[in-house]
Length: 86
Image (cartoon, rainbow, N blue to C red):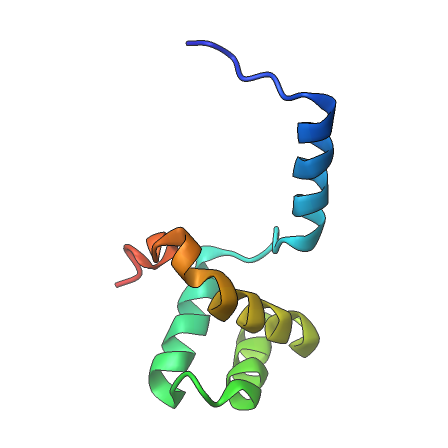
């Protein structure tokens, strides 16, 4: 198998994206997030953020940012992170 070698600009882009991503967001956190939305409905952002923050131990502003990114970009992943949550 051929090894993928990134150019300097690709490495910089990878590092930049890593900084704005959610590297410590786990599958358990995603399950909690989805289950909370199933229970409360997608529109109740403040309550969702509060409850997920309490359960995950993550700050509310971090969960709120995740909520916004999730709903702005979930179709990009074609819901692939949602598979196997059951």
